Every structure is written in C-alpha cells, then in structure tokens.
Length: 279
Image (cartoon, rainbow, N blue to C red; front, side, top):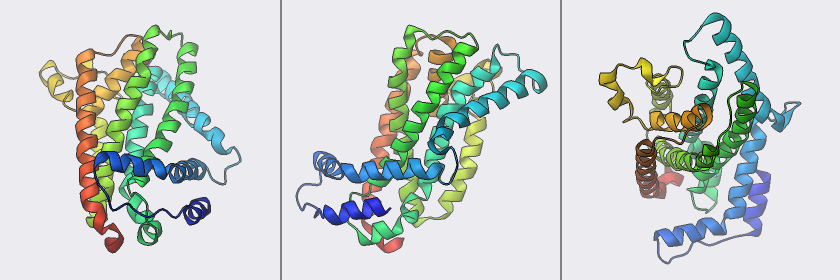
C-alpha cells in the first residue's frame, strides 16, 4: 500500500473532462499502469506474507494438492477414470482461479475503501489487478501441472498451442464476473455471502470431480449452458486428452465471456459514481 500511495503522490493525475468512451477509458487505465502493476505485486506478495517459503508456495501448493489427490483417489475413493488425479487436477486449477478471484473480488471495493474515498484513479483497476494476479498464479500452477502430466506419462501434444487462448478467454470471463460481483456488493453486502454459497453449488454442477459421461444424456446439453463446464472441458481436452478443444464449445465460451465482460464493465461503470459515498 505504501508503494501505491507514494506512486499516486508523485503522479497526481487529474481525471479528464473529455470523452467517457471506451478508448478514453483504455487510455486512462494505461496512464495508471504503474498503479496496476503495484496492486498486482501487492496481491502476489500478501498471498504468502510471513511464510518462510514465500512465493515458492505458488508452486508448492498445487504440487501438494496433487499428492493428496493421488493418494486419496488411488487408495480410498477409487474412481473409474484412468489417471484420475490428473483428470481432476487440470480442471481444478482453472476452477480455483475463477472461484478465488470472484470471491476475493466481492469485497474488493469495500476492502480498499480508503483509496476509493480519498484518491482519484480508474476504479476498474481494482478488479483488473485481482484478476491479473490470479491469472499469473494460474499460469505458474499450470507449469506444475504440465510437469506432473509427464510424470503420469500423459504426453504434452501440439494442441498446447490452444492453452493460451483458453486462458485468455477465462481471464475475460473471470474479470467480467468480478466486475459484476464487486460493484453490486458495495450496495448489497449480503451478495458477498450469497456468492460464497453460489460458488459451492456451482462447483458441484460443473464436471470437475466427475466426468461428463456420468451425467445422463438427457441432461448433458443443459450442463454445457454452464460457462464453467465449457471452461473445464477445454482445459481437459488440451492437457489431459491431448486434443484440440471442441470448437463449438470454445466459441460458445468465448462469446459468453465477451458478453459477461461487456455487461460487467458496463454495470461497474454505472455503479461506481457513488462508491466513495457508500463504502
């Protein structure tokens, strides 16, 4: 926080009275890119603040999760899925990014109320920063996943070229949801708690711990109305199955993500004008 305040004192930007169009907003966010960078750094540092291993936990956490899943599902809860720990792991990592970012994002504006009340800056930088820091954590976790895939003798194929595409689409979707939840929660504080319950239910209606084949055929088409199911399917296709994601599912996920991002940003900008008064 000290770094951010120092930067703001040195760079006292005054909000433009010109156009409020999208191009203007992008330019303004670019002007505050150093603030965004500092917020991302702050979030990454505070994740493991005070721990002896610090940032190394970014790699150790997913590795330890994999060890637990390997033991649990190979000795106790046997699933009829080949190399189930990796089947679960490659879907769980993107889910954790989505769930963690949106749950932290719900209270984001309120938690930063001192900045919101006292300092001018593009408010959307707060949700963007939390989405970017989570994205970096996801990317590093996926490196652990790729190493684990080789240990489990699951080959990495040329279809890995599609992984950055899926990650960027997920970033759009996650940021859009964070815009929506963070802005509404300023005015309706119960949203933060309701969202936690919703995320728990969302986890179980998304085929993460079970394969889609376990879902009755009559209901499978409804499952793919769930953006998270499209997301999980794409990651599994690339990493676990070694094939290119289902093109129809990928396009659907992209369209849904762009719609959510557009709506989320619009809602955020409509509600942000009274943030300082309400928080």
